[in-house]
Structures are given as C-alpha cells and as structure tokens.
Length: 205
Image 1 (cartoon, rainbow, N blue to C red):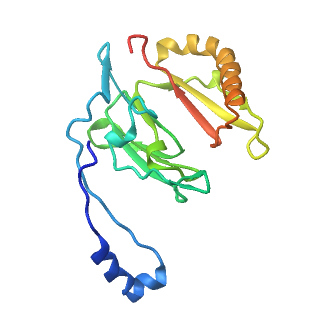
Image 2 (tube, rainbow, N blue to C red):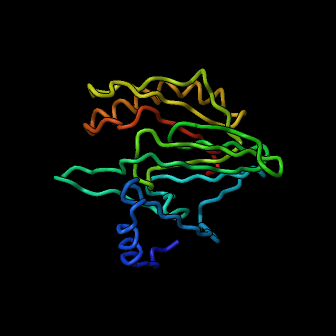
Image 3 (cartoon, one colour):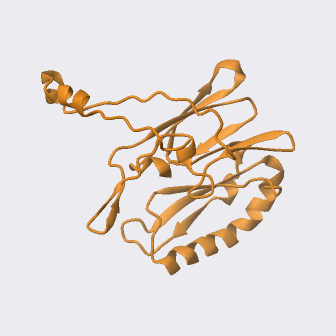
C-alpha cells in the first residue's frame, strides 16, 4: 500500500525495442501481478452488509492498485490516452458500481457475480473509482446535469442505494441536480466525462 517498490526496466525495454515483431506492432505490454493484503479503511460493514468503496482523496484507489496519475503539459492536466478496464468479483447479494461503461455482469464461482467495466474515454488509474454493496439503481431518480460546456452540455447522473433508501434518494434527486450544477458553474470546471454514478452509503457511515 506504500509506493516503496522501484523497478528499473531499461534493460528489458532495450531488448524489446530491438525486437522486430515489437517494432512492427508498436505496442509494449507490461503485466504486474500483486496482492493487497490489508487495504486499511477500505472495506466497511454496516448491519451485517459488506460495503467497499474508493474515492478521490478520502479512500483512494491507489491503496488497492498501482496508479498512473497522468502528467501536466503546458499547464493542462493530461490523463491516460488509453481506456482502463476493471473486473470485480463480488459475493452473492452485493453489486459493483464503477466509473466507466459496464461491459458485462456474469455469474462467478461461489455464487457471486463478476462485473467488468471500461473507462470511456481514458482516464488516470486513480480516477477509476468503484463501490461494492447491496446497491440497486434508483432509475426513476436519475437525471441529466446541465453545464456550460459546448463539448459536453449535459452529464447523465445515475443514483444507487440499498432498497430501504430508494424512496429517500428519489426525494433528494431535485436537490442534488441543482446543487451539482451550481458547484460546477461556481468552479468553472465542467465535469469531463459523459456519465456520473452516485452511491449512497448507510447513514452510519
């Protein structure tokens, strides 16, 4: 969970650059296999139901996965130009929600489900958020957030909560829409992606 491992790959990459097949394809792939033993503070449990979630600064993804942040170019933040894929296997009764487009939701070993997502468009690894819990989508409460951006004048917002909170989430949708539009307008920083998912955690959180 700490960035204390540094590996020099220069010799390996040199060999790849001299490889004729690699030159033709123009693509290099590095696979890193790792295990997270105890992602502190990342898995929560309320009333016997397991929740797990990551967020920008509160519970960052970098405590679960190696992260590539992107870089500054001429004062502008440039994120990864490639989509990121994410696969989560969760126990029965729980659902995974993540940034990006859902590719599939299939049965997994042990009676759970396997959820696959891909970021669209590309983004830094640290921005690939996810949440796992007894979530249901409150479809009737979803809305389009309007913003002053000619490239993306609206953002589709989806709301998720456990079944007992669905009615309350529906009642909050109008307030959320206005508040989110006011914040984006005040900061003069349009939301850069086509969709936004909001997951409601239990009040005890």
